Amino acid sequence: NFAAYVITGQVIFTFFSDSTSLAMTSIFSSGQIIKKVYVPKYIFPLSKIAYSLVNMLFSFCAVLIVCAFTGVHFNWTIIFSFVSISYVFLFSIGVGLILCSLVIFFRDIEHIYGVLLTAWMYSTPIIYPSATMPDKYLFLLYGNPMYYFVTHFREGLLYGRIPPLELNIQCFSYALVTLVAGIYLFKKQQDKFILYI
Image (tube, rainbow, N blue to C red; front, side, top):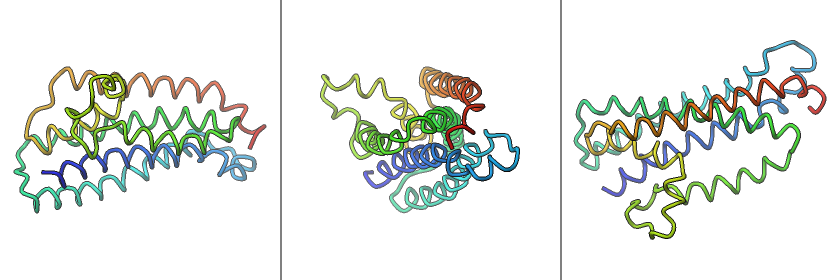
């Protein structure tokens, strides 16, 4: 079911790319507010990621419609789709905090990240099955956090299976480690933001 396969991968990756791109620019685009009024700085990236989450939930409704029209049989395992979205949400917060902490000091990251996202999308099995990737490139697949999130999302929604424990551990580990790293870097750098925005 190619249409359902593509849209389930695309919606997860789009959520991640949109939320992290918005979070990345959230601090310096709000520089005038930060300079005039004291506001906890983490509010800015978190609000952008929350905004993307709301868009994702609307997109999820569209995904269900496409899946229904293309013959996907839904069952109770669809609830694991929300677990997948939660993993991506936490991962996006971590990546977003890292990016907005760095782009304040290195503005070129904003342009580099756009190129990186394109390469990242093509290294994630969104429009092709993971089984078709040549063995010599499998390291790109297994080292790609989005591969695990997309696979987790499809397991419950498309295939009607409970995502394996190992897959849940991999998703949770990527999300948690990135979140902790993002929080640590953001808290370490946030007092310097005012000097560069």
